[in-house]
Amino acid sequence: MRRIGALVTVLLAALVAAAVPATAASPSAAAGPVLSQTVPGGPPVNPGDILKSSLTPGTTLNFTTVPGGPVGLFCKQSTWAAQVLSNPSAPGTAVANLLNPFSIASCFDNSPTVTGVVGVTVGSLPATVTVSDASGYPIQILPSTAPLVISYTVTTTGAPTVTCTFQAGGPVAGSTAPGGAPWQFTNQPFKLVSGSLPACGTAPTAFLTAGYSPVLDATAGGTTVYVN
Image (cartoon, rainbow, N blue to C red; front, side):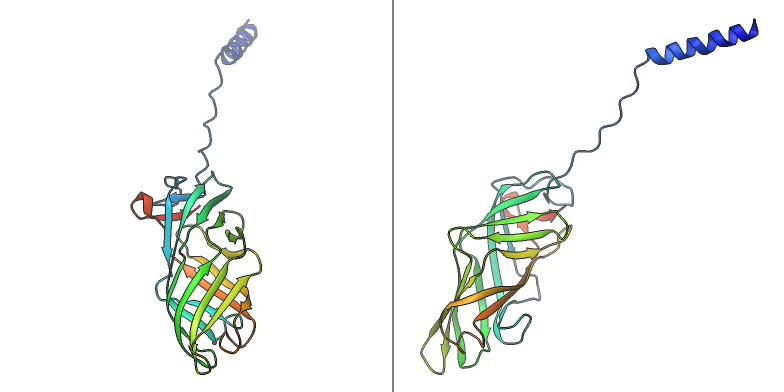
């Protein structure tokens, strides 16, 4: 009888357990946005917001005739702005419209025959800029109607002024890192399409290197933008 009673108890316990719904598993936290404000994984940067950035303090924008070389155009100031078009949940790619003007200033040029820099402009804007949280956190500036153009005018010993125009061969590639790391472009090649050597450098190719940080959401009061 004890065995029968024990068996009945086990069966009743099994029936009760079956009648009680299993507790639902806690849903995983929703994926955060590719770009967030204030803190990593914080509130998303909203489509329509204006992002702004300038050169990382203590660095220069370099436009040199060999990668990382000592000869070329060196600028102490550069700023840009972009309007966010989309900012999906990670993993994904945020897309923004790089706006005109893209400012480059306070430059000197140590190319042969150059005595001064009159001014620098960036053409073929607006352009599309993408920021991905994929491996390496790639950034790309994609051609709009034409590849990105950098033009600068210099005074020289041989002519009053010479204007040098360089054009990117395609997308300008960069990268960043999680958090508020600089948006970095390193040794990106541009071909000389107008202007003459040696005023425009010692070779018909120039290599752009520049790092921008912090990136700020001007629409949200200048909060820091983080890549997640």
